[in-house]
Image: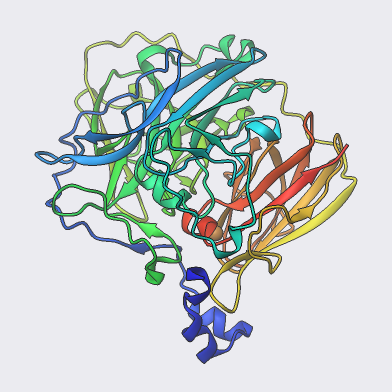
Amino acid sequence: MRRRALLGAGAAALGAAGLGWSLLTPKRPGKLLRSRAELPKPFEARLTIPPVHTGGEIVQREADLHILPGLTTRAWTYDGSFPGPTVITRSGRPAALTHRNRLPEPVVVHLHGGHTPAGSDGYPIDEIMPERGAASTTTHHDMAAMRGDVTVGSRTYRYPMTQRAATLWYHDHRMGFTGPALYRGLAGFHLVRDDEEDALALPRGERELPLMLTDRAFEADGSLRYPTGDPAFMNGVLGDVVLVNGLPWPVHEVDPARYRLRLLNASNARRYRLELDPQPPGGAAFTQIGSDGGLLRRPIGHDSLRIAPAERFDVVVDFGRYKPGTRVRLVDRDGGNVMRFDVTGSRRDDDAAVGPLLSRTAEPLPPPARTRTFAFNQGPDGTWRINDLEYRPGRAVARPRLGEVEHWRFVSDFHHPVHLHLNHFQVVSRNAGELGAYDHGWKDTVDLRASEAVEVAVRFTDYTGTFMLHCHNLEHEDMAMMADFVVEA
Ligand SMILES: [Cu+2]
């Protein structure tokens, strides 16, 4: 019921017709939430790299983190850290991950970018109830009769890993509560490695940095500030502090050498336009080698990277192009500071390289069996919808056939990062024309901007059953901008 009340009055006053909405709909997604805590100066925290998961259960529990100087922040964590431990798996080797829920509320785990059977995909009502004192917190009025595949205490997710090397991530996916759950800390990296990638001379070891970007706002006591239920934030929550790997505007010392940065935008709603400042001589600061679904066929140089929520960009930056002693800021041209790299003069050794051909497994898909259109729009009552439908578990908006290629066309009157489960896709056109600069390679999330149409090609493989199509602006997702699709044999 909460969802239906949002913006209802404003919509009625203006009428739901096109003109009313174009006036009502703000140009950019999200609303800034300011911290009440005293914020640190940028570039005082040292960048940390999340611990690597070394086996055993992942215990989801509350933990007191030190994010702001002198304050503690109670967070929801995977194994006590934010980001959670980085899971590393190998292509072709099945993995099983058991999650134990010691949090006060139910959870669901989704492996974002994972090619997984439906039962391990983290369907939003397939909850893991808390181990102890399971409070029943189902709040959707229409959910009473609906029950997913619920377990109590723990659940083992099975990941076949029949997929190529890529930067995946895992995060909460509980129906109606994904926004607050990620905001409290439930997100971690999952890296897949394979022989094709290992054969390349990419930077590795301490020169391979997973970087999770999030934005947050804090209360005066250091706790996280999230505007639960406030209709003013229905376009998305933007914090006033950018955290990289869970710390505010950190700094990292780098050698004058090539580094591989696995950039993940795990923010609820914030989009970034990332640049290095100063730019290296000659420009093209970022050599993109991969996208959501792994290596590109050929590298692409960028001065600037637009990264929408849930997207990943795998890039190589050559800090050897800067004079030692240079302080290189990573900035968001639409926001402010993100982090800083201080180029030190200590080690110039660099045997890493980016060759002209990265991958042979990025061939275009054959012509589609059919084309479907999905409109991502706001309803007259203010809810976010796909093809005029609010999300309801069990209602399929498409039934693709296993093994067939389809073209899915996404259209919108607003900004929506559109995410597809089960298979990676290839963008085939943007606004019926050429791809955008960030549309290349295998992707699972595509940035759809206001009044745009993006067409993607996808082949549904290996698993039948129910999967999800949804907006990855988490406030939109929680306000019903999701849909089921069912892959049929
Ligand atoms: Cu959206």
